[in-house]
Amino acid sequence: MTEAPVLIVGAGLAGLSAAISLAKAGIAVRVVDRAARPGGAIHRQPLPGVQSIASAAQMRRWSGVMAQVERHRARIAIICETGFGGLDYQGAALLTGKGAALFHPRALVLATGARERVQPRAGWTLPGVTTAGALQLALKTTAEAPKGRVLLAGSGPLLLAVGAELTRLGAPPVAVVEAGRPFSHPFTAMQLPWAYLTEAARHLARLKMAGVPVLAGHHLTGIAADGQALVAQIRGPKKSLSLHVDQIGLHDGIAPNDLGLPDCPAIPVVRLGDCREALGARAAVADGRAGGARLATLLAGGTPAPATPEVDRERAAQKILAQIYAHDGLKDLAHLPADTVLCRCENRSLADLRSLGPDPAPRQLRLDGRFAMGACQGRFCAEWVGRLSLPDHAPLMRIGADRWPAQPFAIADLVDAPEEI
Image (cartoon, rainbow, N blue to C red; front, side, top):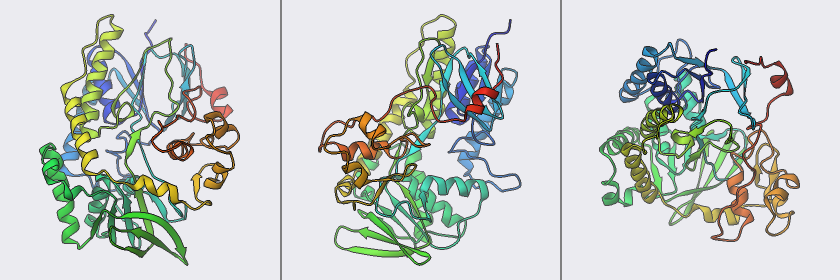
């Protein structure tokens, strides 16, 4: 009888690096991903016939990973356009879509990457407002910039990267509104790895040559509609201003995309890459490679080795980035209009949250308030609902729990999934 494969959810850098390590140890692996092709968010592949806009360094890294995957294809099966429905208490995994199946994997590796954080603002659900990450994915898949005037706002290095990519495609953004003051901490920034500094310098040089202002220390506090245009209301350190644009990309950092993902006593479950700790692409490769090797050792009955020093170095780099991008934007939550939508899935507003009374319990937030109950299961709203429900400086509560299923799916997916013995 053939031994069941290890199931890896996510065909990005961490997932494929783990698959390579497991395959080298002689273990069969099944990698699934919702996208049409492997790559994850960082290495999202362009549509057929579209020229990639990836940098030379990105292309070298991805080519190196895929070359190793091809060398071990006998033990690595990659099935795209396939979702992970969850894992039950007996260790049965449900896959939906093209690779639909109900089977018992030998182990489960969760490499689902990061989720993008977007702080609620008045008007953030208006047409034409997206996340900066979604805008970047569109650029990578189509190599075409959106029409009209684009504004990027929030905080974090991704804003510079997306701005530079827009500029490279001939559509520089109107401005980059950065809540932090990263340029005010030169000595702290010099502690970053050289690769971080050179990448940032390339982005900034491209933006400067195109005349794109980077408004550090500015906060996008609200968005209003003005006919076909959007009006971005921006609070600066000395004065406020308004910008008329056609599209806005918001970004307020990243966090592990692990909401609802289960643990299971029946089989080993490990999280790797940004799904475990949001440390970026460089750490994802190292964490995936080392995590796959540790899991292979565990399955063979051995004692896994400790974490790799490469991950520790990237963790230190992310702490430095957090220092230089720190800002007080969370204070704006206290001044949101009552009709500001917090939960996009269920269209629940700040007024709906306040109607639950002071200090609502997580169960009350979900069952009575309908927060974190929609299709995304709180990936966008849970953090902000939690912050708005608690007194200042109180520990952030968790809304919802790990569960079966990990995300909503149709009953037909469960009924129609072929069962593998």
